Amino acid sequence: MNHLTRSLIIAPQWIGDAVMTEPLLRRLHARGERLTVGALPWVAPVYRAMPQVTEVIEFPFAHGGLQWRERLRLAKQIRGQFEAAYICPNSLKSALLPLLAGIPKRIGYLGESRVGLLTHRLKNPTKGQRPPMVAFYSALSGDTDTAEDRPQLILQPSEITATLIQLGLTHQGYHVFAPGSEYGPAKRWPASHFADLAMQLVLPVLLLGSGKEAELCASIADRVNTQHPGRCLNLAGKTTLEQALCAIAASKSIVSNDSGLMHVAAGFGVPQVAIFGSSSPLHTPPLNPQATVLWLKNNPHYQPPLDCAPCFKRICPLGHTRCLNDIQATDVLLFL
Image (cartoon, rainbow, N blue to C red; front, side):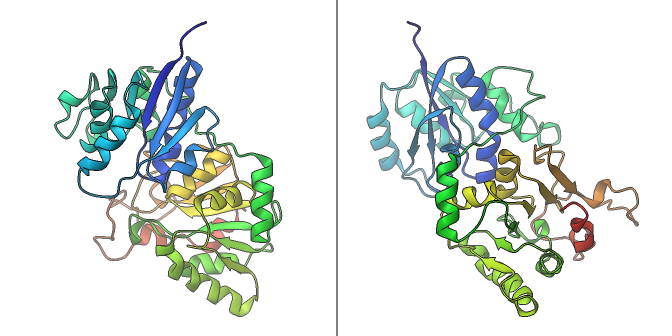
């Protein structure tokens, strides 16, 4: 009987990046590696939607600081359990646990002075030369042909059905809007535009996001429901990530900014419209045959051209945010 290499995946800390590591995990699983993912609690549910993952360990870490005590305690618990570790983040602290746990093979990109922490090192491309993120992560497998990689997420039908019952929803009986973006307002389509779009749809709209986006979503729901009572259901900050994944997987379609939930929808193959502003779909596209990307930068009919895009800024440095403001609800409606 062949021995399965026991591998630990150190997951990124963002939902979208977690989704984009799925092709890497699929490659590793296909060649006979038994995969355990170590992830922060708010990312862990994404990996439970990847059937190639045997186990998910939720890290007891928080943002900032090395948190030596917690890392040493966990390293002691997992010592001897793994032969290889794939370290997706570029930070120094993300490479500490595999070293402290004595994992003999530690693969990752160079960065943050962690040469001595890695045994297999990939050169970190400069920002201008960095490939799309899916290919960036897939390269950790050692394979060079990553052109056909597309993230795929899978949930059990029974789990989806149970969640829809909890939320009072029906399969494909609603659209999802994800109007937030953790990065900043230069990645957010205006709330008024989301509201205008909701008022032109026949099916109800489910608003999803984190607790930080509850007020933003409330402003959309209040405006829409004033004219169309009950059209919008605001669940921002009221669902678990597991529930949000189920709701997206069962939706008629989703409209979002360049955000983590955009990548979740792509992983489920849900019809989607992804609206890009300060960022670039050349770097983090929704890899989904049912995705439509709206980005005025590559629209030859939009004048004057957006020479400033992509700026990758949190707030528009020119103060106009034309890249988002000038995409109208009617532009999105064409694809729903």
